Image 1 (cartoon, rainbow, N blue to C red):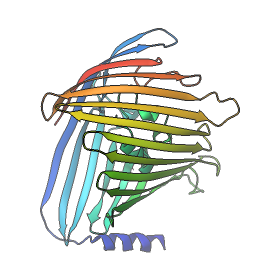
Image 2: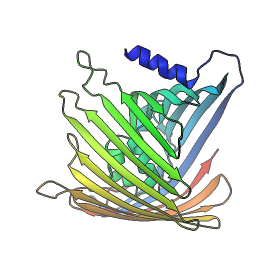
Image 3: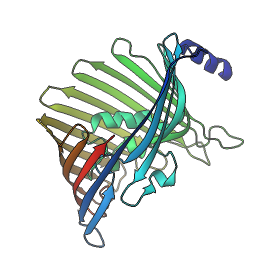
Length: 327
Protein backbone atom coordinates (compact mmCIF):
# COMPACT_ATOMS: atom_id res chain seq x y z
CA UNK A 1 0.00 0.00 0.00
CA UNK A 2 2.75 2.45 1.03
CA UNK A 3 4.75 1.56 -2.09
CA UNK A 4 1.75 2.28 -4.33
CA UNK A 5 1.14 5.65 -2.66
CA UNK A 6 4.79 6.63 -3.13
CA UNK A 7 4.69 5.57 -6.77
CA UNK A 8 1.52 7.59 -7.27
CA UNK A 9 3.09 10.75 -5.88
CA UNK A 10 6.16 10.36 -8.09
CA UNK A 11 3.93 9.83 -11.13
CA UNK A 12 1.81 12.87 -10.27
CA UNK A 13 4.90 15.03 -9.98
CA UNK A 14 5.58 14.10 -13.57
CA UNK A 15 8.84 12.18 -13.44
CA UNK A 16 9.43 11.11 -17.05
CA UNK A 17 12.47 9.29 -18.38
CA UNK A 18 13.93 11.61 -20.98
CA UNK A 19 17.23 13.05 -22.06
CA UNK A 20 17.36 16.75 -21.28
CA UNK A 21 19.51 19.61 -20.06
CA UNK A 22 21.21 19.40 -16.66
CA UNK A 23 23.24 21.77 -14.51
CA UNK A 24 25.37 21.59 -11.38
CA UNK A 25 26.22 24.66 -9.29
CA UNK A 26 29.00 25.11 -6.72
CA UNK A 27 28.15 27.66 -4.02
CA UNK A 28 29.16 28.64 -0.52
CA UNK A 29 29.55 31.11 2.34
CA UNK A 30 32.69 32.00 4.29
CA UNK A 31 31.96 33.88 7.51
CA UNK A 32 34.36 34.78 10.32
CA UNK A 33 33.77 36.96 13.36
CA UNK A 34 35.38 38.05 16.59
CA UNK A 35 33.17 37.08 19.53
CA UNK A 36 33.36 38.69 22.96
CA UNK A 37 31.34 37.08 25.75
CA UNK A 38 30.52 38.35 29.23
CA UNK A 39 28.77 36.90 32.25
CA UNK A 40 30.02 33.34 31.97
CA UNK A 41 30.83 31.14 34.99
CA UNK A 42 34.55 31.12 34.11
CA UNK A 43 34.84 34.76 33.13
CA UNK A 44 34.96 36.57 29.81
CA UNK A 45 35.44 34.99 26.38
CA UNK A 46 37.43 36.33 23.42
CA UNK A 47 37.31 34.07 20.37
CA UNK A 48 37.45 33.93 16.59
CA UNK A 49 34.43 31.95 15.34
CA UNK A 50 33.26 30.76 11.94
CA UNK A 51 29.68 31.12 10.76
CA UNK A 52 28.58 33.91 13.10
CA UNK A 53 26.17 35.78 10.79
CA UNK A 54 25.63 32.81 8.44
CA UNK A 55 26.88 29.28 8.75
CA UNK A 56 29.96 28.79 6.58
CA UNK A 57 29.38 26.12 3.95
CA UNK A 58 30.37 24.53 0.68
CA UNK A 59 27.59 23.06 -1.40
CA UNK A 60 26.62 21.48 -4.68
CA UNK A 61 23.14 21.64 -6.15
CA UNK A 62 21.95 20.24 -9.43
CA UNK A 63 18.92 20.07 -11.66
CA UNK A 64 18.06 17.96 -14.69
CA UNK A 65 15.11 18.71 -16.94
CA UNK A 66 13.07 15.51 -17.29
CA UNK A 67 10.53 16.99 -19.67
CA UNK A 68 6.87 17.73 -19.11
CA UNK A 69 7.71 20.40 -16.54
CA UNK A 70 9.44 17.92 -14.22
CA UNK A 71 13.04 18.06 -12.95
CA UNK A 72 15.39 15.87 -10.96
CA UNK A 73 17.06 17.85 -8.18
CA UNK A 74 19.77 17.29 -5.56
CA UNK A 75 21.65 19.20 -2.85
CA UNK A 76 24.84 18.18 -1.03
CA UNK A 77 25.96 20.82 1.47
CA UNK A 78 28.82 20.69 3.99
CA UNK A 79 28.99 22.91 7.06
CA UNK A 80 32.46 24.37 7.67
CA UNK A 81 34.16 25.73 10.78
CA UNK A 82 36.48 27.97 8.81
CA UNK A 83 38.22 29.26 11.94
CA UNK A 84 39.79 25.79 12.34
CA UNK A 85 39.11 24.11 8.98
CA UNK A 86 36.98 21.40 10.60
CA UNK A 87 33.54 20.19 9.52
CA UNK A 88 30.48 21.49 11.38
CA UNK A 89 27.37 19.48 12.41
CA UNK A 90 29.42 17.04 14.45
CA UNK A 91 31.89 16.31 11.68
CA UNK A 92 29.37 15.06 9.10
CA UNK A 93 30.63 15.33 5.52
CA UNK A 94 27.37 16.80 4.24
CA UNK A 95 25.83 17.72 7.56
CA UNK A 96 23.83 20.74 6.48
CA UNK A 97 21.78 19.03 3.78
CA UNK A 98 22.00 15.95 1.60
CA UNK A 99 19.00 14.97 -0.50
CA UNK A 100 17.80 13.95 -3.95
CA UNK A 101 14.34 14.12 -5.46
CA UNK A 102 11.99 15.26 -8.17
CA UNK A 103 10.12 18.51 -8.68
CA UNK A 104 7.18 19.38 -10.92
CA UNK A 105 3.80 21.00 -11.25
CA UNK A 106 2.36 18.80 -8.50
CA UNK A 107 5.09 19.68 -6.01
CA UNK A 108 8.39 18.17 -4.92
CA UNK A 109 9.38 14.87 -3.34
CA UNK A 110 12.85 14.70 -1.77
CA UNK A 111 14.72 12.07 0.25
CA UNK A 112 17.69 12.44 2.60
CA UNK A 113 18.87 14.78 5.38
CA UNK A 114 16.69 17.91 5.27
CA UNK A 115 15.51 20.89 7.31
CA UNK A 116 12.43 20.21 9.43
CA UNK A 117 9.24 22.08 8.52
CA UNK A 118 9.10 23.64 11.99
CA UNK A 119 12.65 24.98 11.62
CA UNK A 120 11.88 26.68 8.31
CA UNK A 121 8.91 28.24 10.12
CA UNK A 122 11.31 29.63 12.74
CA UNK A 123 13.56 31.07 10.02
CA UNK A 124 10.63 33.05 8.62
CA UNK A 125 10.05 34.72 12.00
CA UNK A 126 13.64 35.33 13.15
CA UNK A 127 15.12 38.47 11.55
CA UNK A 128 18.59 37.02 12.25
CA UNK A 129 17.82 33.71 10.52
CA UNK A 130 18.89 31.90 13.72
CA UNK A 131 22.35 33.48 13.58
CA UNK A 132 24.50 35.81 15.72
CA UNK A 133 24.60 35.61 19.52
CA UNK A 134 20.90 36.42 19.65
CA UNK A 135 19.83 33.42 17.57
CA UNK A 136 16.22 32.48 18.30
CA UNK A 137 17.03 28.76 18.31
CA UNK A 138 18.62 29.05 21.74
CA UNK A 139 15.15 29.36 23.24
CA UNK A 140 12.53 28.72 20.54
CA UNK A 141 10.84 25.46 19.64
CA UNK A 142 11.93 25.55 16.01
CA UNK A 143 15.49 24.52 16.87
CA UNK A 144 14.77 22.58 20.03
CA UNK A 145 12.54 20.28 17.98
CA UNK A 146 15.45 19.63 15.61
CA UNK A 147 16.98 21.67 12.82
CA UNK A 148 17.30 18.72 10.44
CA UNK A 149 15.76 15.29 9.98
CA UNK A 150 17.78 12.26 8.90
CA UNK A 151 16.37 9.45 6.75
CA UNK A 152 13.56 11.72 5.63
CA UNK A 153 11.01 11.65 2.83
CA UNK A 154 9.49 15.11 2.34
CA UNK A 155 6.70 16.33 0.11
CA UNK A 156 6.31 20.02 -0.69
CA UNK A 157 3.11 21.12 -2.38
CA UNK A 158 2.84 23.76 -5.10
CA UNK A 159 1.39 27.15 -4.17
CA UNK A 160 -2.40 27.17 -4.64
CA UNK A 161 -4.31 30.36 -3.85
CA UNK A 162 -1.40 31.57 -1.75
CA UNK A 163 -1.27 28.35 0.32
CA UNK A 164 1.47 25.73 0.36
CA UNK A 165 2.24 22.75 2.61
CA UNK A 166 5.07 20.44 3.66
CA UNK A 167 4.87 16.90 4.99
CA UNK A 168 7.93 15.04 6.30
CA UNK A 169 8.49 11.51 7.59
CA UNK A 170 11.81 10.61 9.24
CA UNK A 171 12.41 6.86 9.54
CA UNK A 172 13.43 5.83 13.07
CA UNK A 173 15.23 2.76 11.73
CA UNK A 174 14.93 0.84 15.02
CA UNK A 175 14.68 -2.88 14.31
CA UNK A 176 11.44 -4.47 15.49
CA UNK A 177 9.54 -1.21 16.06
CA UNK A 178 9.21 1.36 13.27
CA UNK A 179 7.67 3.91 15.66
CA UNK A 180 10.77 4.26 17.85
CA UNK A 181 12.86 7.34 17.03
CA UNK A 182 10.42 8.16 14.25
CA UNK A 183 10.01 11.85 13.43
CA UNK A 184 7.02 13.53 11.79
CA UNK A 185 6.89 17.10 10.54
CA UNK A 186 4.37 19.31 8.81
CA UNK A 187 3.85 22.95 7.89
CA UNK A 188 1.16 25.05 6.27
CA UNK A 189 1.96 28.47 4.85
CA UNK A 190 0.06 31.35 3.29
CA UNK A 191 1.45 34.38 1.44
CA UNK A 192 -0.49 37.28 -0.04
CA UNK A 193 1.43 40.43 -0.96
CA UNK A 194 3.27 41.76 2.11
CA UNK A 195 1.68 39.23 4.51
CA UNK A 196 3.11 35.76 5.21
CA UNK A 197 1.71 33.26 7.72
CA UNK A 198 3.01 29.82 8.61
CA UNK A 199 2.47 27.10 11.19
CA UNK A 200 4.94 24.26 11.75
CA UNK A 201 4.64 21.06 13.77
CA UNK A 202 7.17 18.42 14.81
CA UNK A 203 6.78 15.14 16.70
CA UNK A 204 9.75 12.97 17.62
CA UNK A 205 9.35 9.63 19.33
CA UNK A 206 11.65 8.35 22.02
CA UNK A 207 14.21 5.72 21.01
CA UNK A 208 13.08 3.31 23.74
CA UNK A 209 9.37 4.00 24.23
CA UNK A 210 6.26 5.41 22.60
CA UNK A 211 6.59 8.79 24.37
CA UNK A 212 7.13 11.75 22.08
CA UNK A 213 8.24 15.37 22.10
CA UNK A 214 5.69 17.64 20.40
CA UNK A 215 6.48 21.14 19.20
CA UNK A 216 4.24 23.67 17.45
CA UNK A 217 5.22 27.08 16.09
CA UNK A 218 3.06 29.84 14.57
CA UNK A 219 4.78 32.65 12.64
CA UNK A 220 3.65 35.84 10.93
CA UNK A 221 5.56 38.33 8.80
CA UNK A 222 4.49 41.66 7.30
CA UNK A 223 6.57 43.75 4.90
CA UNK A 224 5.69 47.44 5.12
CA UNK A 225 8.38 48.24 2.54
CA UNK A 226 10.65 50.31 4.73
CA UNK A 227 10.16 48.01 7.74
CA UNK A 228 9.60 44.25 8.06
CA UNK A 229 7.97 42.96 11.26
CA UNK A 230 7.65 39.39 12.52
CA UNK A 231 5.83 37.61 15.34
CA UNK A 232 5.98 33.99 16.51
CA UNK A 233 4.41 31.84 19.22
CA UNK A 234 5.58 28.34 20.09
CA UNK A 235 4.54 25.47 22.34
CA UNK A 236 6.85 22.66 23.51
CA UNK A 237 5.71 19.50 25.30
CA UNK A 238 6.94 15.98 25.96
CA UNK A 239 10.20 14.14 26.39
CA UNK A 240 13.58 15.80 26.00
CA UNK A 241 12.22 19.30 26.54
CA UNK A 242 10.83 21.52 29.25
CA UNK A 243 7.11 22.09 28.77
CA UNK A 244 7.12 25.73 27.76
CA UNK A 245 5.76 28.48 25.56
CA UNK A 246 7.79 30.92 23.46
CA UNK A 247 7.04 34.37 22.06
CA UNK A 248 9.20 36.26 19.54
CA UNK A 249 8.89 39.78 18.14
CA UNK A 250 11.29 40.90 15.41
CA UNK A 251 11.96 43.85 13.14
CA UNK A 252 14.20 44.47 10.10
CA UNK A 253 14.91 47.91 8.67
CA UNK A 254 16.85 48.13 5.37
CA UNK A 255 18.39 51.51 4.53
CA UNK A 256 20.89 51.96 1.74
CA UNK A 257 23.61 49.35 1.98
CA UNK A 258 22.66 48.60 5.59
CA UNK A 259 20.23 46.28 7.32
CA UNK A 260 19.28 46.85 10.97
CA UNK A 261 17.67 43.92 12.83
CA UNK A 262 16.32 43.45 16.34
CA UNK A 263 14.42 40.74 18.21
CA UNK A 264 12.95 40.03 21.63
CA UNK A 265 12.16 36.50 22.87
CA UNK A 266 10.41 35.39 26.02
CA UNK A 267 10.25 31.77 27.19
CA UNK A 268 7.67 30.73 29.80
CA UNK A 269 8.51 27.58 31.75
CA UNK A 270 5.25 25.72 32.48
CA UNK A 271 6.73 23.62 35.29
CA UNK A 272 6.01 24.57 38.94
CA UNK A 273 9.58 25.80 39.45
CA UNK A 274 9.61 28.15 36.42
CA UNK A 275 13.36 27.52 36.40
CA UNK A 276 13.66 28.00 32.64
CA UNK A 277 11.81 31.31 32.40
CA UNK A 278 13.98 33.45 30.14
CA UNK A 279 14.10 36.47 27.89
CA UNK A 280 16.56 37.52 25.20
CA UNK A 281 17.14 40.86 23.49
CA UNK A 282 19.36 41.21 20.42
CA UNK A 283 20.41 43.86 17.90
CA UNK A 284 22.46 43.47 14.71
CA UNK A 285 23.51 45.53 11.71
CA UNK A 286 25.06 44.47 8.41
CA UNK A 287 26.73 46.73 5.85
CA UNK A 288 27.09 45.50 2.26
CA UNK A 289 30.46 46.30 0.70
CA UNK A 290 29.27 44.59 -2.49
CA UNK A 291 26.62 42.08 -3.60
CA UNK A 292 28.67 39.28 -2.06
CA UNK A 293 30.61 40.80 0.85
CA UNK A 294 29.28 42.36 4.04
CA UNK A 295 30.51 43.56 7.42
CA UNK A 296 28.43 42.97 10.53
CA UNK A 297 28.10 43.82 14.21
CA UNK A 298 25.68 42.36 16.75
CA UNK A 299 24.98 42.50 20.49
CA UNK A 300 22.75 40.23 22.55
CA UNK A 301 21.75 39.60 26.14
CA UNK A 302 20.16 36.51 27.64
CA UNK A 303 18.72 36.79 31.17
CA UNK A 304 17.39 33.68 32.94
CA UNK A 305 17.91 31.16 35.73
CA UNK A 306 18.30 28.06 33.56
CA UNK A 307 20.14 28.83 30.30
CA UNK A 308 23.77 29.86 30.76
CA UNK A 309 25.15 30.58 27.28
CA UNK A 310 24.66 32.75 24.25
CA UNK A 311 25.27 31.09 20.88
CA UNK A 312 29.05 31.47 20.58
CA UNK A 313 30.14 32.63 24.05
CA UNK A 314 29.78 30.97 27.47
CA UNK A 315 28.01 33.91 29.05
CA UNK A 316 24.83 35.94 29.18
CA UNK A 317 26.02 38.76 26.90
CA UNK A 318 27.73 38.62 23.50
CA UNK A 319 29.27 41.03 21.01
CA UNK A 320 29.97 39.87 17.42
CA UNK A 321 32.11 41.68 14.82
CA UNK A 322 32.94 40.10 11.48
CA UNK A 323 32.83 39.74 7.72
CA UNK A 324 30.85 37.45 5.39
CA UNK A 325 31.48 36.52 1.76
CA UNK A 326 29.17 34.45 -0.46
CA UNK A 327 30.05 32.78 -3.76
